[in-house]
Structure formats: C-alpha cells, structure tokens
Image (tube, helix red, strand yellow):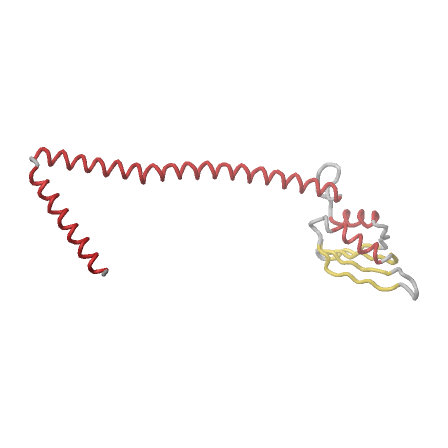
Length: 178
C-alpha cells in the first residue's frame, strides 16, 4: 500500500514538472528572465525573513539577557561583600580601623567572652596552641562554636581532660593553624 502511495505521488510530481516545463517554454526570453529574478528575490526575501531576522533578534535578546545577568551578578557580589564585612565586624574579626585582626587576637577575645580563662599561648611554626587549665566543657565548646564565625581559623587538635574526680571542669589544649 505504501508503494501505491509513492507511485501516485511520483506520478503527480512528474505531471507537475511537465506542466511547469511547458509553461516555462511558452514564456518569452524576457518573461523567463523576469520570472527567474522574481523567484530569486522571493527566495532572498524568505531567507531574510525566516532565518536572518530571527537570528538577529535572538542575538539582541541574548545580549540584553547577558547584560541583565551581569548587573544581577554585580549586585550579588556587592551584597556578599557587604555581608562578609558585617559578619567580620560582628565576629570581632575587624579592628576599629577596618583592618583584619590577627587570629590570635580574635581567639583570645572570644575566649574572654565565653568565660574561658587562657593559661598560656604557645607559638609554633604556622600554628599556636592555647592552654586552658580549668573550664566547663560547655564553655570551651561554646567558645569554639563562636569561632566558627571567623572564617580564617582551623583547629588542628583539641584535647580535653578531666581536672579531678567528681568535678565537671576540664583542662584543654587547642592547637590552631595561624
């Protein structure tokens, strides 16, 4: 059945070609030239209207969209920088002049706020160790949690030991990467 349809289509195409060839032969040379020019102009017009204009419109829309997204990105970057500076101020990472405080200063200040008494600070190669002789474990953990707001710190080691029988207090040794 499919071959029957193909045969009918093929015959219709052959018939149309014959009619068009006869029509073309019946035209004068001048009419043939004008008809060919009109066909060429129609093809150019369709190519321009169906391909070139939509591509140009798409390029303009893409440029506008890119500009909007670049503006949105720059606003997000400004907001993130503002948020980071506010967090740094709130966490005590910046001093009064807007400069970044040394990590040791931030660690010691937050320890005082968390009621953790620092016994001594031992410096080392790109690290320093804080010794606490006696504090509640909750105070030490709260202090370390406060330090999580400071993005520049890394704890290399945390050791907590009970100070005595029946006491809730512990001694601690915390090593930070400087």
